[in-house]
Amino acid sequence: MRRLLLLAALAAVACGTRAPKEETMAQLRERVFANAQVQAVYMDSLLTVMAGPDRPSRCPRNFQDGKLVTSDIDWWCSGFYPGVLWQIYGETADTLFRQLAVKHTLPLAELLNHKTDHDIGFQLMSSFGRWFVIDFFDPREEDVLPPLEIKGILEKGAAALASRFLPTAGVIRSWDHGKWNFPVIIDNMMNLELLMDFGDREVAEKHALTTMKNHFREDGTCYHLVNYADDGTVLGKQTVQGFADESAWARGQAWALYGYAMMALKEKEAGNMDLADTFYGVATKLEDWLLPRLPEDGVPFWDFSQTDYRDASAGAIIAGGLLKLRQYRGAKDDGKGLRAAERILRTLASPEYLAEPRTNGGFLLKHSVGHLPNKSEVDVPLTYADYYFLEALTLYPYAE
Ligand code: GLY
Image 1 (cartoon, rainbow, N blue to C red):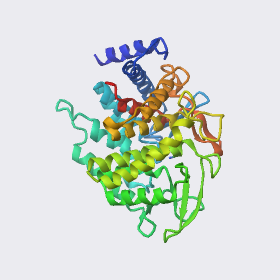
Image 2: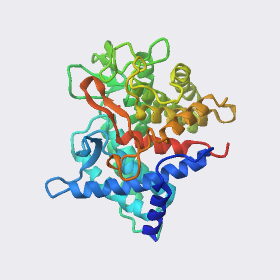
Image 3: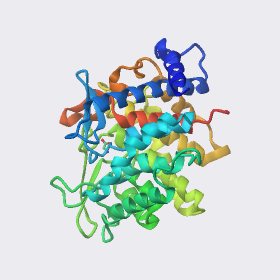
Image 4: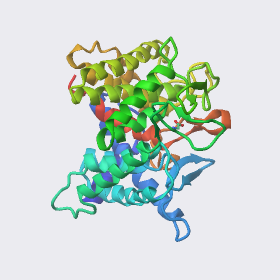
């Protein structure tokens, strides 16, 4: 039966990734998830061939020169492929994807025995966090890990993240490497979700408030990195992965938009309307800057000052952030962000970005940029582009 379902998915995408004329967003979601099923199984088969006793737990990283490039579990992206598998399981309830998701999530528990950094939020929330929320805990399925154990792993990860908080500065340290005294990158806003759901919410709130004060420019955009002295004095503001210190690195803006929209929603759910409004204010100011600056097809260039390479990952994350802001506004939403998110998703689901089945190393999307100034991962598929693309498709309000 399972094979039949997968064959049906393959048949559905066999004619390529072309959208039918006048495709509705619901049809688009169905088409993309059918493609995702084929790609995810294909990627697992490539990983299985590559694995060996001396190379356990390889995680997909990108696809370059016709080859799947992998990482170990310490790489910040190790949770995203398991997260893709959990999202497919959440969408299809096909237990093949539960098995694959469990298989690729379990090795990440070992992270708790490693030296971790702020990326523990990305790594655990996309894998175990998804497991905790999406798994149906079907009594017919064997509980590989009871929910309480999954929760325990997430709580331990949250404690490791909180241990990086410096109270005198009011922020969580991002990196342990490099020339900085106490570097904080805007990406760290995304890791706060682990603390909000499984750890010390006050630490997350303080980090978001300090970042709001020091990372943002007058126009609403943000710097990539702020370096702090131990007493919280700002020593410098700069970029690492963007074009220039004063330019707007697209994924940095995407992390900020999504991160503050996520924080606003969490505070609203908890009834903390003062903080909710404060975080919502940061996200909407950035949204106002972003919307008129997105290219016509919605997918940004890797830096807003550049016009060479597009970054599908930034597009997918921005779409998710816009949809979260729409959720926050509810009935008061004016539809501007929603229309931009739809534009981005339609472009990402077009043949220009969406890979043909069983190509692209099993990644869904082409054309992302990892770290251009380092000449690393330029115009390649990346796991987080796929993860946030699928997530945005599940956040989209299809009834409207
Ligand atoms: N968090 C690293 C990046 O966005 O490239």
